Length: 191
Image 1: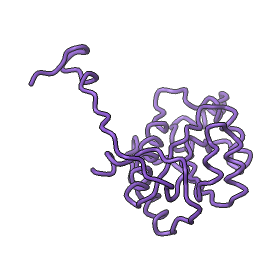
Image 2: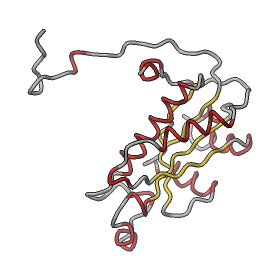
Image 3: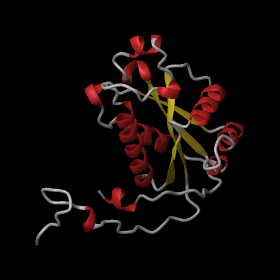
Image 4: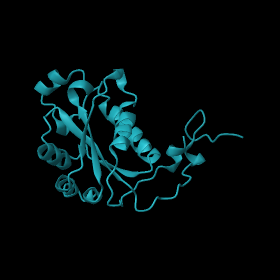
């Protein structure tokens, strides 16, 4: 549980490669995430090449740290697994750009859980990382798909820039009891 309280977004990285064993454990942790109907719709793209990381950094003003991070992990959703009606929806025009429509599409929650698991394991490995929202920004989605050869049913959901931190941010207590409602919204708890 300490990783939950110690994890912070890290955007500055040392010029030091991340060991394969640590990357394997990070991905294994991501694969242990809960998934609706056990569909596990995730696919991961690991980017370590400097030119590729610089290309990712240029895709968004909020992704500049990808150029200096030794590793960028892209959590992607396989819409064929994440949406039980994908074939039918694809014929109706469902694309990576508008894939969130539908009643039984839980891939966003599935991928969110997997990314959080990866971030917690990154902390456990003595590394730092930052979650970069990618989906549903159409420009970022399309740029990444084109640059890395993703087929139409694979959607880049989020990226994680990771590596050894220049400095480790101090943990903060973010608990706010005013945001906890008991029984009904607006009712504070009693001691």
